[in-house]
Image (cartoon, rainbow, N blue to C red; front, side, top):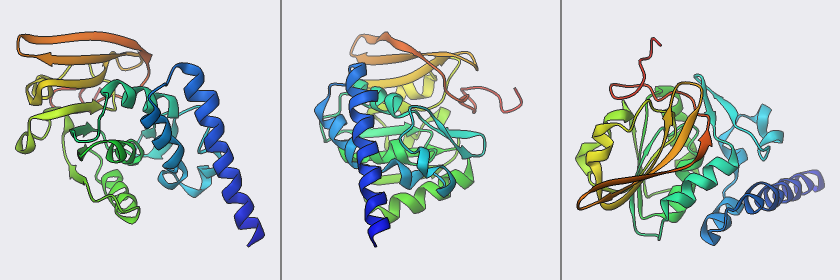
Length: 223
């Protein structure tokens, strides 16, 4: 019992250090994002063997060639979405489900797509176990979006794309925001896309490195 309580306190301290040393020190200032990052347990979304590294300042492998993103990148992308609490969000790349959980805490409804069947099933189990009822998951090609429920107030892409997929641009609502890494297979720029009545505006939020976005409007699975 004592060992268990000590471990819980240790994880809590590691999470708070992450907030101060990895997020606040790098200009993550949205208080809602910081609060949720301090509450959602990253260790719940990774294998038991890696849980001691849950709050490392780095991505971690989750299987099928995918990773759980670095906490700072999760916070940055979430902050750039400027969520107010009622938005309908489309997430491309469910992965472990960690970013999904962060979004679910901050938005009204999250629609998330994962191309790996195994990861999709694992994420579904974790998110259901944690009680997230405002998340709808789908297994399939995220590069073409989820037209059935479009348009979306926000779209987040958690893999590197050679360009902004046209399908996702079409599914973004007027006044909406999309955050998507764009570049080659080895390095990308985090692009923030705003849709207006007259078209799209974009800005670069900094360099990043993501696994490739595979699909019809992304990279080929064969390289």
